[in-house]
View (cartoon, rainbow, N blue to C red):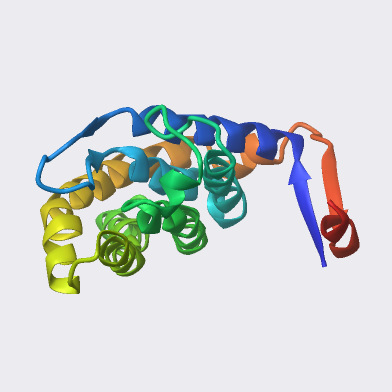
Length: 204
């Protein structure tokens, strides 16, 4: 098995990684919970929709890994404390949000009302709700509270806002993807490709 990365794919992955970093600074603390309202998870939704499963996962995983090794990428903070802290479960799930959103959204390229509804459901379920099982469980573990209390602190207050993010992502994605399909900016123009075999990956 071989993984192929086009130069354009890497560049756009970096751009969406930077978008998530920028969005992470747009957050509001609720005071009663360590989990802020943030636009960062919308970056994962957008990466999945526009980059697809392959590059979407790579883009957001890049942010998570670089944050874990100490780069101050998420709201100006970095290090394992970000990943192992109360919000770690949500952060770890962001690459998988992008993966599933990218995979499932690529199956529908229409622009009628049904296409909008389908894409909204994909983004809402896999770009938003998918985070909560691990996010809430890790929050409960990290601050030593019950699951019921963790749901109050880390789930219920955010459901409506996440639905709005999914809706905005959908409203932006469909017309833009119609004008600029992902292949036009990820693969076209004779971009060179970097290929890594399993053995080469294991050696890095």
